[in-house]
Amino acid sequence: MKLLFLGTWEIIVIVLVVLLLFGGKKIPELMRGMGKGVKSFKDGMNGIEDPKPQERESSEKKKSEDGI
Image 1 (cartoon, rainbow, N blue to C red):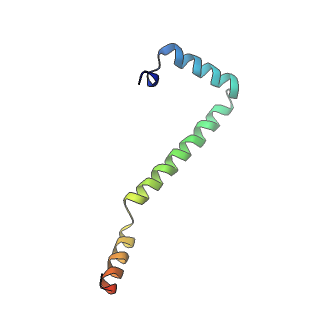
Image 2: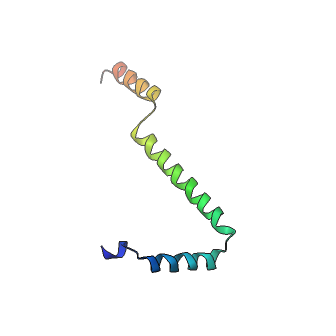
Image 3: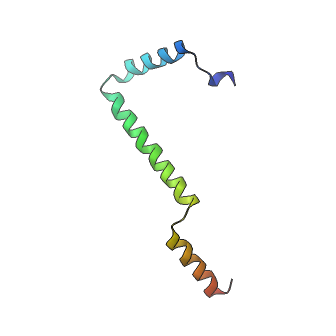
């Protein structure tokens, strides 16, 4: 589990390497894209866990009509 803990110098080196690879102008675009991806993932997970009330009611009504 020691791999998960990064020291100050390791973080500085990682940031410098990212700056060298992508440049200062590209990083905000990358972060924006990552943020949208994370938001989309969270929205998808919330949609799976908490179906819309209309969908719940219609599925319950359908089950009662089917006699299940």
